[in-house]
Structure formats: C-alpha cells, structure tokens
Image (tube, rainbow, N blue to C red):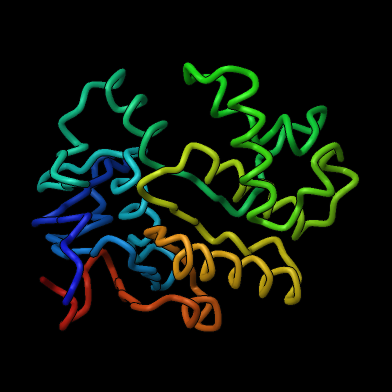
Length: 230
C-alpha cells in the first residue's frame, strides 16, 4: 500500500523581480511526496529545482499556491513560527559543508540542539548517535581541517539528522566532492532512507546521483514535466 503524502504541493508558482521584469522560477507546479520516499529533483541550471526545494524546506515562500508538509501550509507561517518549524522538521545538507572551523565534529553536530530544551547529557547522547550513524564516532573530536571532504559532508549530514527531522533535504550535496566521497555520501543518504525511514529530497544535475533515489522528478523552465503530477 502506498504511503500517505507527507508533502502536498498544489499550483505552486514563484516569481522573482529582476529589474522591471518578472522571472518565473516555478510555474503552476503540483506534486505529492510520500513519507519515506527518496526523491531526486533534476533539471538544468535555472529549471527551478532549488527554488522548489527551498519552498518545501521553508527557506523561501511561493508567490502563489500551497505547500503543505504534514498538513501545515508552511508558506503561511510567520517568520518566528517558520524558524521554529524548520528547526523541528527539516535537516539541511548543502553543497558547501558550512561547518564552523574552530569547532570539533561533535560541537558542529551539537549546534542545532542548543536551541532545544535538552540537557547536556541528552545532547551528548543524540550527537554520539548521529555521528555513529554516519560512521564518524571515532572522529568526533577532530576539527574540520583534520577531516576529508567526504568526512566533512558526513558531519554535515549528522548535524542535519541530530534533531530527528521530518525531512532531510540535500541541495547538490556532492558538488564539492571527488567521485569516491560522492558515492559514500549518496550511499549514506540511501541507507538513511531505507533503514531509518527518512524522507529525503535531493537536488542534483547528475543522473548518477539521482539513481540513488527511488523516484526522479524533472523540471524545465519552472515546469514539472508531464506524468509527474498527483
């Protein structure tokens, strides 16, 4: 039986003002993503795939339409409520690792938990579990400069996972990695989806990366190509 949609997008449009011209980033996009899916968003540069990811993750807002995550229309939340919602429901993994150079792997992963009411002992348990999950328990006291690029991205994934988010969103997460490290990171995302049941949304231009997902959606010029609508 197909899982119920965790994300419901209806008639989503996003316009950007460029001088006196409106540029359409998304044009009337509708789709469902089920809980526990691993979805790849593909398309050429400027196709709207990152814009769609950012709206789903509550980083950006649509011009028109709805984006419901677990029944909440995230585009209608106030900035304060949206920040709380993101911290509770979304784990971010980006092309740049965004690790703080003077903090250890442990301290970088712990950062999102400092916004919660967890005790120091509870935070430590969560961080150690997240680093164990990405295979870096033995590197928790290393600084980013003491890690390889692939290891840095795995620390970033641990940081994204540590709050146990509803969604794990990744925007070109292998863009700065060599082929071996990219394979490790994509395999990790696939394992988190298959064994931990995480809903993963991956933006990529690389068909080899998209092959790790269970479903691929293609965008061109802000439109979702035929056959992908709910």
